Image (tube, rainbow, N blue to C red; front, side, top):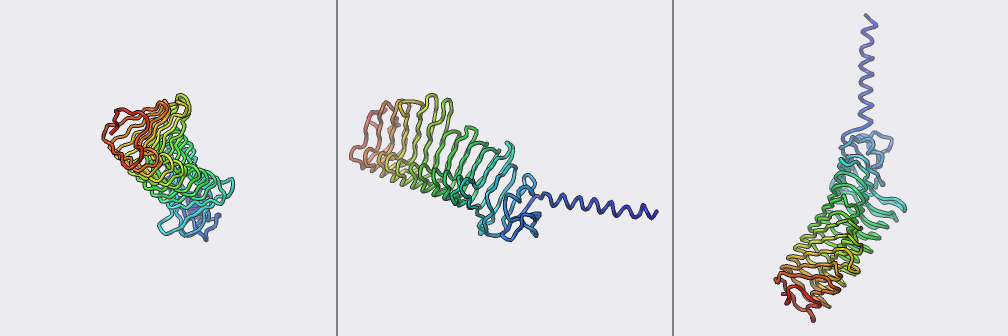
Length: 359
């Protein structure tokens, strides 16, 4: 009797220890802090120091919470997880040459949330790279001073970018280069990039209430591959002060189609086009629809060139542009509903239009 009675607490102790070990191995919510240690279990009482050590200790679908302001290092994400820095907490990372800040390489059904992060390059390659994943949400983040692109989408399903700042990166701010991707952007600024604020090569971009300023091109839908289709919708937005153009769609590869729709938006202070559609060498199909929008004080207000290019303007104003308010060239098609306004330019139009007179 004594033997059997003594065995029960031992069994209970073993079960208890097993449960404790499992709890330490992974949790629904883990924590990182400036005073953390990566050998810790990443609990509130014993936080980790870096994101890359906290994520393996987090259950799929769980959260990594930042407790105080510090740098938490680059990280690769391969599971559903949220990385959250509360308001007022600086959660930074500074990728060095050869490094990316955050790489999302998750499964097709995984959901990843990045909230409140600051990625400031120290010669690093890219701030955020999405190569796979079901949903990726980037909210209240800053991506700046990377050597290449700020945010690059090369795969995955749906990407949502909200209330963020992307600035001063070596190439472009946001690059969408995956036909599988649908990228939705709202309330975000893209500024001071060597090339483009936003560049779309493949896939779908829906941008609302954005600003793209002081880049080479604000929003560039550029040269999808043969047989590919790419689409951009830009609404309630401003593209300004870009050294080349505000928002343009361009094809140069046979069999490709690129479509851009611009609604309730303003393009101003751009050196060349406010809005433009180009089929380089007459190759591919570039379609631009502009409605309820304004282009003023650019080189050209609305331009179309190349046999495969079509631009359509309706209920819009093209005014005070230095060369032409509206330009059609090289067999492009430029159409209007006859309800636009031109004013203030020495030579308002150039080319042939349908209908004619244009306005």
